[in-house]
Length: 212
Image (cartoon, rainbow, N blue to C red; front, side):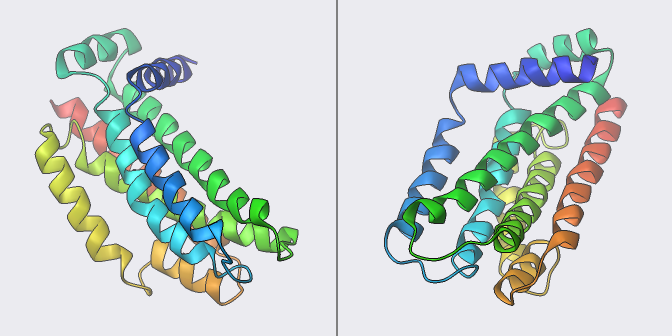
């Protein structure tokens, strides 16, 4: 319960700071362009939005991790009973952001209409986006505080990692999820791998935080 309380606190802080609006509006604007005309039959229109969600989810994770100044974070860690709960709360808020962005991408072509979207197709699209979101959260957490305290280094490393890995169609879970999606499969394993990557990243971050 204390972890959920930390997550609520961090989520409120992110909302109050309104910095989440930049990635939200950027992603929403790209979705409007992608699906504003004729995106083509499903599931191919989701390939681009899933790939784009990868860096946006990393961006959101960095925003959550940096929502407090270092001095305030020390107070939060003390109140939470240790850094592990704070990292877990950060993970939950970042994953929730990824889920909301996934919902935006999955719903966007439905609003346009013109093509049938049966439940198996919707599930496949959701899994591909969740794979990208989870992996993006993992990258964001590993590149943010307390692993990298300076935002400049965080930005440079996150952009490098995402840029190198996003363009590899064979590389799981993001590249392979998009590949499976475009071939008409269900990237469920990739979605689970993305979630696992986010949890593993949070575990590493918590270990780093305990040593500092």
